[in-house]
Image 1: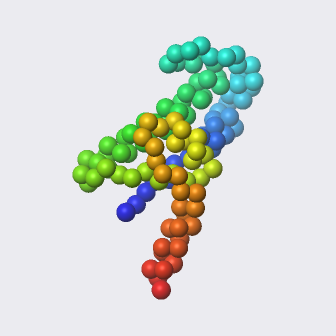
Image 2 (image 1 turned 90 degrees about the vertical axis):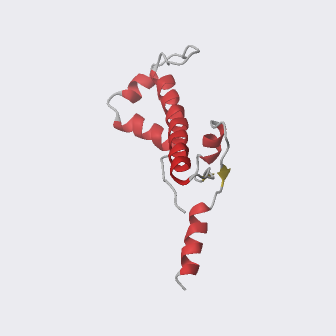
Image 3 (image 1 turned 90 degrees about the horizontal axis):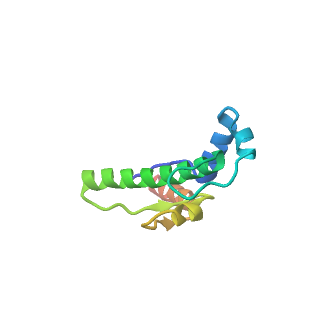
Length: 112
């Protein structure tokens, strides 16, 4: 058994807005996006990228796990953005708010 840790939607947004030169200023002056695949402003492009990254990451990891183990993996999601993340996915994962604490409890009982 194992897992992956990836940044949530808010963390990705914060990294873009604070670690990318002048993006915050550009976002202040963005106008609404046109419907379609590509955004026509900073805010729309940032939102589309975060959503696409999550879908792509999940799909790629699931395929690798299935190919290497022959088993379809279960997806458990935790953290403050869990609800938003599962809302963007075609196949839902299970939200487990205290997943880290459950893992620590398992480790604690194994070391006794």
